[in-house]
Amino acid sequence: MSHEDFKAAITGGQTALGIEFGSTRIKAVLIDRRFETIASGSYEWENQLKDGYWTYDREEIIKGLQAAYREMKQEVSSKYGVTLQTIGSIGFSAMMHGYMAFDKQGELLVPFRTWRNATTGAAAKALTELFQFNIPERWTIAHLYQAILSGEAHVPNLDHVTTLAGYIHWLLTGEKAIGIGDASGVFPIEESSHDYHPAMVQQFDELVTAKGYSWNLRGLLPKVHVAGEQAGTLTAEGAKWLDPDGDLNAGIPLCPPEGDAGTGMVATNSVKKRTGNVSVGTSVFAMIVLEHELSRLYPEIDMVTTPDGSPVAMVHANNCSSDLNAWMGLFREFAQAMGYEADSGKLFGVLLNKALEADPDAGGLMSYGYLSGENITGLEQGRPLFVRSPESRFNLANFMRTHLFSAFGALKLGMDILTENEKVAIDSLLGHGGLFKTPVVGQKALAAALNVPISVMSTAGEGGAWGMALLASYMGSKSEGESLDQFLGEQVFRDVEGTEIAPDAADVEGFRVFIERYKAGLAIEQAAVDHLN
Image 1 (cartoon, rainbow, N blue to C red):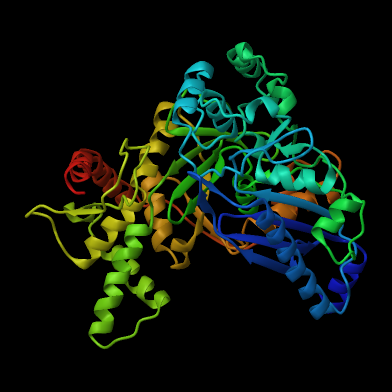
Image 2 (tube, rainbow, N blue to C red):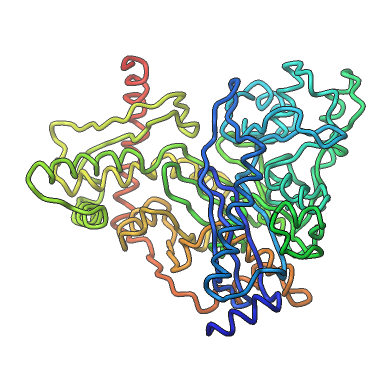
């Protein structure tokens, strides 16, 4: 689009705004009806450990919201010479789970407890056993029940419990609403009704009935919405919260607030059944859209949903690229000691590509990149570890392949539960994250590990705020009866370029040998935890 086209879209309200609250950055992205970014803004922040809980101050939540919006608004003004006064549709997303609890006056009863808090073990275990449904420690219902078990003084005064995205939406619209994807990290969802699972809601109420609280669970939780529905409009007070300058008009429609897992699925066109995405970074997680719910409970698998309500199996491993990055740092030090300055792109490119020259099974080498514990393999703590036998073929190519394969080791074990135990069919997966900046190598390793074609799209780096803007745009512009996956596939991603790499038979067999060695060597990792303090 031309400069004048963008300007006309802005003044005519032919736009959508997505704002996402990530763990280290709040980002605002304004897009046009062709889904191109017009302007963006951001605000950096960090969680703090206060009184034993990881949290963000309520004041900084508001400050960050306004700062990200203001920077985006200023970019609109400087680029196009207009003051932003209206927007076609708006949506908010945030890191999922956690606990924000309010009384009848709308006052926050305890500081925001984020997903990072591992303080709800007793509650999560008890609810998992009660529901026969996996309740991770980070889920909102686990935080609530732990507060009950601990006898926290605020519990009898509860009126409303929500997530961070739900809070922002409520602040700006007055509506206690939540998108179904975010809601699936609050409480289990029933697929047929697209609502909180009624039998489990009843079980919870019966569990706490002796406490004599004036509230019941359904009254506490926000109303569930699916993608495409309108979940409120920007109030005059909400417009002032978002834009303290007073330029933004009230009355703008808002789509349901979502979680960061949902916006990641949207931003990677991974909401269709039998597809999914793998996010690779410090940790690694795969989101697989299922054709049907799993047959039984698996502690290694979280059950969530897409923004339009399809069941999703989430395999999350705590450790992925951190140890690989640490070795890269060591190689950088060596290069500098030899008098060479290698930028990160060249360093990663050269070393990762050596893995393509390696033996299929990485030559008998083994590593565990466990900087922290790993729930999938039952390790409560981690010790980064590299091991080889006298017969191992120890060279740079095999060394690099070992660390690449190991980065996907725990993920592979979780995925095997889906593909082998549950016979889940997966047609394709989309990979995103820094490891895929080096072409081919990461895709080939992941394809070998999961035995599924791996694609990387040119838009994979756009991020969750852009995904949230797409959800806002879907609400505002979808055709009658148009599903979310149709909207994404036929409109947003129709002409998007990408590369797909299919599994290589030799690589798949090599990874099979490697993962058997990986499983057998977990006792070595446990011994390191036990004896290396």
